[in-house]
Each structure stands twice: as structure tokens, then as C-alpha cells.
Amino acid sequence: MSLSLIGKNVGESVTLKLNETFAILKAKGEPVIHLGGGEPKSKAPLDAITALAAHLNTGEVRYAPADGSPDMKRAVIRYTRDNYGRSVEPENIIVSSGAKQAIMVALQAILDPQDEVIFPAPYWVSYPDMVRLCGAIPVPVKPEDGSFTPRIQDIVQNVTSYTKAIIINSPNNPSGAVYPPEFISEIVQFAEKKGIYLIMDDIYQKLVFGGAVVANPFDYATDFSENSKLIIVNGVSKAYAMTGFRIGWAVANKALIKAMSNIQGHQTSGPSILLQKAAIGAINGIQSVVSSLNTTLENNKRVLVRQLNAFDGVHLIEPQGTFYAFADFSAYEKSSKKLSAYLLEKVRVLTVPGIEFGMEGYLRISFCGGIKDINTGIERIKWAIDPNSPNELYIGERKLVRDWA
Ligand SMILES: Cc1ncc(COP(=O)(O)O)c(C=O)c1O
Image 1: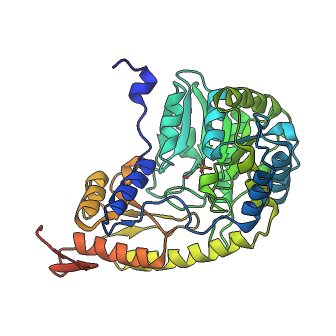
Image 2: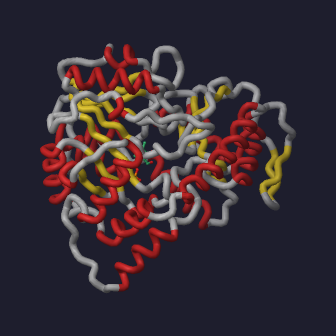
Image 3: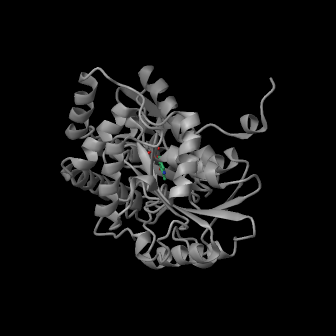
């Protein structure tokens, strides 16, 4: 078959593929546990549902402006004022089908073939392919000190004359690290000085634990003109448990937003008006839904961290936000793909291989599900890889007998 270079080279989203595997196994009645998920289990806020239903009931569900409906933009203006202390105008905003599309159209609007985009590892699985979709080159940067927290020199060392953008994601998927304000301050100032676009992927901004503070990039910016190359991305998927609504946005300079809107207009004509209404309902509605999700996640995290710390040979840096833990299993198995496939085959537990996030030997384990799944999932993992565990394990009615070393 004849495919384009992009068609040939862009890989499937690993995390979406895992969701599919989970659904297939579940439908077959397999006792599979999903510790690889990327979405909270709570229901969408009632305010989102009622706002969507009210619009649906009018029976008039039409095209909306490609860059977002005026009332959705007002909600984003309010969100930006409340959460970043910045007043922006409607022309500084694009509403997209998820934070993912907001990042994608930003990259399409700024990248030429051969341009380079730097992001710290571990990184969200989609960044490399999104950059490649633009014909550009992803440049992942591993913190040299072995931590999950990048240092400015790690980034600076990788900047070349081709560097067009830097993507920063804090709280970070997959590590749960919240980057320190000193780093955010340095990267904002560095990008400003060099004239490099800085994309802040803040999708987990509200999901933090134990008083962790997510630094506000605007606190360190000095260029607030329409030449600013700071791009803030956010959305309702994670904090409001609205992944399926597919609403995210970007805030940036007006010329860039216009270019992004032109691109998006030819791709999807913009996100559905119904789903924008739901997002408005969530943003303007009762915010206790977010704090109660945080409480649940923090509790889940405590259970998972306790379980993993009791696991000889597993090394974990405790997550400060998101709903992921990125644990080092290399003492058991160096290849994260092998280990993840083995855990799925032997004990029906889904995890995501660290190599997909740019770090070998790790597994990403999600704590966005229920406590029971976390406890049972880790118990099964332990049984599968710890040579000292008993010979038998029951999964429901099914007895598993260890037939491997
Ligand atoms: C770091 C990061 N950015 C962006 C997204 C995309 O979010 P959305 O569902 O709004 O497209 C995700 C989703 O998993 C993510 O983990």
C-alpha cells in the first residue's frame, strides 16, 4: 500500500491502544485490572450535564466559530484570571477538541520541517509523534541527575539554531512531579530571551497533593505584548473528569491564535457547541467537584505509594500531582515493554511501559481507579515478579499456579 511518510512513520497512541486491549479482555470476561488508565473514574460535574442538556433540548445544535464559542471564551477568560491572575482577550484564546488538539494546532502553526522541539523526559507519550506530524524533530531531554525534575542546564545544552519550541508539562505525566518554581522561572526567562516558543501543558494543574504549588509562568514573564511566545494549554479533561467531552484550549498571542484557528477551521471546524456548553457548566459551576476528586486521588496515591514502597527492589519518587506513579522496576526486568506484556499475560494487570515516556526500566501505574484495583493489582504484580511469593494465587475463582521462575 502506498502511504505518505507521515502515514508510515506515525505510531499508534500506546495509551489509547491499552484502553482498547482492556475493553477487549473485559468483554471476554477476563479478570483484568487497568492500572494504565489516564482518566478519573468520577462522573462529569452535574453543572456540565445540565448545561449540555439545556442546549441539547433546544434542538438547535449548529456550527460554532472554529476558534470557540464566545461564551466558552468568556469561561476561559475567567479561568485564566482566577488561576493565572491574567486578563486576556477573546482573541488570545482558541478552544479545541481537547488539550491534545490545542497543542497539535500550536505545533502546526509554529513548526517548519527540521525544526526541533525540546521537552524533558519522562514526557507525555504523544509529544514525539505530534512533533513528527509537523515534519519536525522531537528532542527529549533526560535530567542528568536521574530525577524527574529537569534543570535549566539540561534544556540549555540541547538548544540549537533549529530549536523552535520547548514543551513543559508540570504536574507531569507520567512522573507526577511538580517542577519547582525556580525551574519555571528560569525556563520562562530563558525562552523569552532566546525567542523560543514555550508551551506550558498545564492539563494537570489542579490535581496536586499535600500543598504542592504549581508555579504560574506569568509570574516570571516580562513580555506581555502580542510578541510573547508563551502558550498556555489547559482543559476540562482531567480536573473535571471530562475526558470524553474533548474540550481544551490555548492562550497565546493574537497572531498565533489566529493562525491556529485557521488550521483548526480546516481540520474540524472547531469543537462541538454541545461539549463547549458542558465545559462552560464545569468551569463556572460548583468547584468542590475538583477538590473532592483531589481528595480521592490523594487517598489512592497514599495506598499505592505504601504498596510500592513495601516492594523490595522497586524504586519510587512519590508523585506530587496527577494520578500516575512512575516506578523503577529495572531490578526485576530491564525491558519495560517485556515486563508490561508479562504482567498482562500472567496476571492480567495493565500498566504502561516506561520506554513509551522515554525512560526504560519503569512502569507507569495509574491511581485514578478504585482502591480495590490498586490493592489487587499490586498484589498480583508482586506475585508475578517476586520469586519469594507463594506458588499459587487466586484471581476470582481462577487458581493461578506459578509455572515460571
Ligand atoms: C500531559 C498531557 N497533556 C495533554 C493531554 C490531553 O488532554 P485532552 O484529553 O484534553 O486532550 C493529556 C492526556 O492524557 C496529557 O496527559
